[in-house]
Amino acid sequence: MVPSRRTLLAPASGFRLLRPLRERRFALLWSGLTISLLGDGLYTVAIAWTAYELSGVPTALTLVGLAAAIPQLVVVLFGGVLSDRFERRRVMLAADSLRALVVALIGALAVAHVLRLWELVALVGLYGIGTALFAPAITALVPELVPQEHLLEANALNQVSRPVMLRFVGPAIGGVLIAKTGVGWAFVADAASFLASLAALVAIGRHGASALTRRVRSSVLRDVGEGLAFARSQPWLLGTLVGTSVAMFFFYGPVYVLLPFVVKHVLGGSARDLGLVFAAGGIGAIVVSLTLGGRGLPRRPLTVMYLAWMVMALQLVGYATAGSIWEVVVASFGGTALLVCGQILWSTMLQRRVPLRLLGRVASLDSLLSYALVPLSYAVTAPVEAAIGVRATLIGAGLASSATLALTLAFFPRIRDVEESAEALGAQHGAAGAG
Image (cartoon, rainbow, N blue to C red):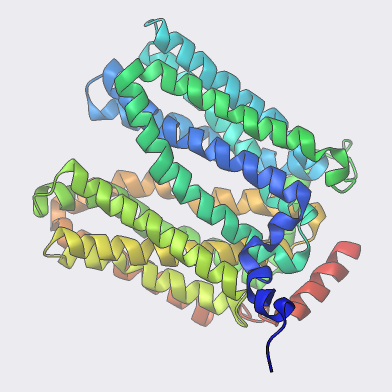
């Protein structure tokens, strides 16, 4: 029997990863954000270069990093309240408008050669506020634009574009642009990239978002408390928020502070070798996003997420024991792939299990707890390394992070009760939303 044309085309037409792009409003959002991520790639190179131009010491970049991180931690819960109180698309428009203006101002000052370090720090703080407002809103907006059965693929698509633009294309263009025209024009180009995101949000239109009840008479603290109360009532959510916060305390400082040290001083590598290590992580993120987006939600997503993150943390052990750059490259590829795998599953679980009216606040709480201990992690990494050495620090941190996640999964009461088939999850979410 000769297969029909329809049968031959079925696998291609059913490619799961691209299904969310059939939704016009999500396709607009994804396209605009992808271009904006290109600008973010320019920004990562330009901000580091500018900090060192203004002050040739590493503490300048540390100061700029703290200026971005602290406002995000302070404001992110308020961002979650706004995204649940008002139309999420408008919150994102305001946040991106603020970030575009900030970056444009940095670029204008840099082009005029009048930018000073304190001005950069202050403006980066405003940029961090914009990010804190934007992040919860986009997490909560995606379920309004995409059918529930396509949420995993939508999150996977976002994780494909992020490393491509943020770790490859953006930094490459940024380096060339800075070399040819100066660092100020890289900031100007980043500001221009926000126009794509703003245009996409405008094109989506108000009809793209559900009508949210504007609870303007309730206090911000009451709204935050409602989100906290929901998190406390859900063992799978509370346990994961607490467990991952502690696990990231062990992980973040060692990986970002000591990985460059291992490449440069332990293995004698170059800046190109460090770039190769980071690029390998980006490739791992792309591969796992394509794979997971094509296969769909696993039967036990929470367990798979925890297992992925438990093994991911052990990449620190790989860095500590590596005898060559290529071993570090392999560890970076696998570790980042597993990190992103868990992130995709976690985002999908939040969007399926949390009622839409609370999703912004829960997402902001997730962001807060995920990074609340990161500054402390950075602070203690250097003295610990000085006391016990780089290899022991990496091995101890990797084992502690992995063990924290394992203990959370094993012993937190009823944390795995949430795991059901994708169909049951969908039915539950619909009932929760109706309630």
